[in-house]
Amino acid sequence: MNRPGIGTILIGFILLFFPVLTITEQASAGETKSDPRTMTFDPIVFQPPKAEPVVLSNGMVLYLLEDHELPLISLQAMIRTGDIYEPADKIGLAGMTGSVMRSGGTQNRKSDEIDESLDRIAAHLSVGIGTLSGSASLDTLKKDFDFGLELLADILMHPAFEEEKLTIAKNSALEGIRRRNDRASSIATRAFWKQLYGKDNPYGRDASLETINSISRDDLISFHKHYFAPNNMILGVTGDFKKEEMIEKIEKAFAGWPMKDVLTYPEVAPVVERNLGAIYKIIKAIPQTQVRIGHLGIRQKNPDFYALSIMNDILGGGGLTNRLFQDVRTRQGLAYSVGSVFRPGKLERGFFLAYGATRADATHQAISTMISHISKIREEAVSDLELKRAKDAFLNSFIFSFSSPAQIVDRQMSLAYFDLPPDYLEQYRANVEKVTKADILRVAKKYLHPDRLIIIAVGDEAHFDKPLSVLGEVKELSIEP
Image 1 (cartoon, rainbow, N blue to C red):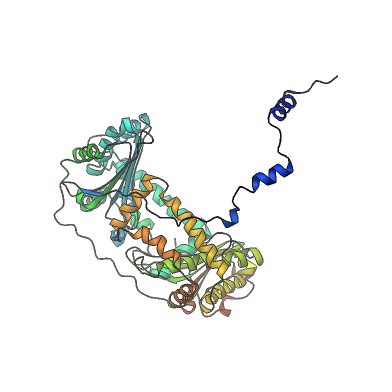
Image 2 (cartoon, rainbow, N blue to C red):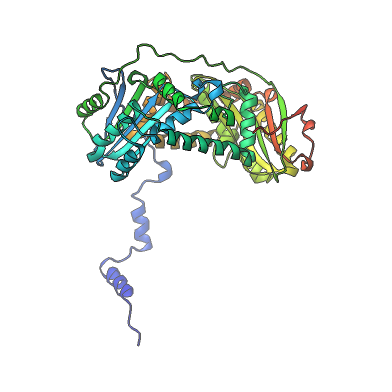
């Protein structure tokens, strides 16, 4: 005879003392609850916490936001520099300066000593320089923060740029250049930037074997000396600390680092309209054609930025429901990856870009379909459903950009760095909520220009479904090393 299992016994016990509601009782209980379809909620008020800026005696600007939930401290820094200020014959210098600052030791510590010290306290420290800014970061336990800050300050103030580490960085950069044409996507993107901005413009140029080989240790020292100063840096700290104590720590760590009386920057060539409507092919025997289609865009301070963001989400930037994805990928099956970006520029004009990778024998079909959608969104209003989906998706995800104090402070620093209004983020959400179908149509007509599109196709022309000349005059580009 089989015995009942322990699960059966427990269920019987529960039913004995907590009888299940009858259907009538369940219905009666449900009547006391509100119908979720009739529930209403107060409007969401977006008010993220703010860190008030503090200016130190050496001119450094601090943003401090306490967070005592965990015994952790995170530090972020922005330095006013960037690779747009590199000499034309030394492209790659800025990025290499940043990386070797971190890897190449200081005048007080060898590189191996710094690495071992960071490993011992399980801290993360990084330094880098991108197109428009330099950056540094430190993440550590509260108990180890003082030592971590000491290391970071030493690296920022007294980098040694060890020759051995510079050689490693140069070899890595050279190998990257040698391999960058292995991927057709890289070829297409580099060609697009060159045609959009011009190969000699800082936004369109890229490093070569010659420019990397020309970089010396003295160049790194000079670049650091020119741009790194306390009054040329914004620093943000979040975590488990007291504000006044942290100000004292930062003052002490960077004591003796002199301010620069004059901060000068090389003149950067302005971005201008060029190649108003041009088609380029790059021949490469690959099964998929890489496509890039676009033109110049706007600056972030443009008040139409909000409507353009929603327009782009509807066209090709918003998840799986955007028009390009639904038509080019889902309905026609022409591409696995397809979409669009309308990215504003911080200091100069940004860009609009539609992109995709399609079968060689569907190249013309994919390109013409993408251009058709770019034209269509200029000619007729989007649907109510498209607008609602795009705005809801944006508004529902926007809050996750502020899920941690570090993100909040990072955004505040970025606003200050690029001279945007302090209430920009609060207004961002409000301005998106106000976008209408009429706004979408207006900005699409004003800022999308089918007649000015730069079209890049990298692929096997012998297998194209139709020659690109069907779209207009075609120029052939070689694959640059």
